Length: 397
Image (tube, rainbow, N blue to C red; front, side, top):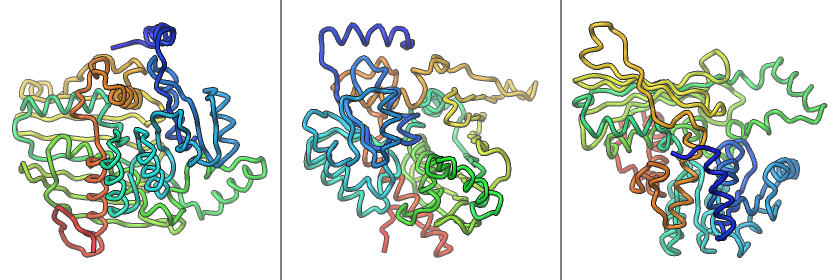
């Protein structure tokens, strides 16, 4: 595993003899600033060549940090730039389809944020464009790349826990009612100071009808992707989807029960914005097997800190305390999930081994993985609407 120092050193040595991958980043909001831009800029193999965002203030802030060669307010101009080799798409959900298709038609390799689109029909159009043009497409479900979740995958493959009986996933943030008087008063105060807090926090996810769905569409694909990665294809889902806050366009609370085609495992995934507390909330999980269990605790994502994983096997019964697992390399920011995601994408595009990341290439999430996660979200919506179990494959009516 490389430290920041060795990465910087390699960067300058590499620049002296080679040209680097020219990357364009569309969208300069939170996910781009946390998950994409820093890691391209630190890579010895790539550079932030261009950025695009309709908001000139976002462009200016990001430009001052990363000094791209070019910047555009129109993302299409970035996509059409012949100098760009690969693109990170960090724009809102509804923009993904057209941007992916245009990028694929221009021969650009693509790292696209989830959810991939707002409908399965849109994703299928994207898939056809990617296949037709033979470009590399990676779905940005970065939790796969977390060393902790990778360790869990490896433990499950070894069979250490025995047959897996049940998985419980519990993930919430707290966002108070945006229609509340005290919230509106505070937002108005900051707007007078020229600060649009809702915009800066990406509140389009809650309030814009173009999003195609709410909290489960936004956050659900992460753990649906992990569940498929760990236990194989989904068999069916039974879900309850709710909207408690009137200001939100779509759901802000979901509880879903999944089963799998290749195992007897059941998995419950709870996702909500409505559990009162600090905004950072909680993100925890339990994996129960016949021979033991794993417990994990994930820190609030913007903190970019390593997750904690605990193992509880027969010997732990004596003390009734789980054993903290030390995840090698996880304390180095260069080996956190977002960094490993971008490093894997760069290696894939350049047809390099992914050994420096320590993540097998066959585990890198594809456009088909992204589609499967979206399919599961849409099936959960249908399950709640019909108040019935929905089987996979799910074909919307």
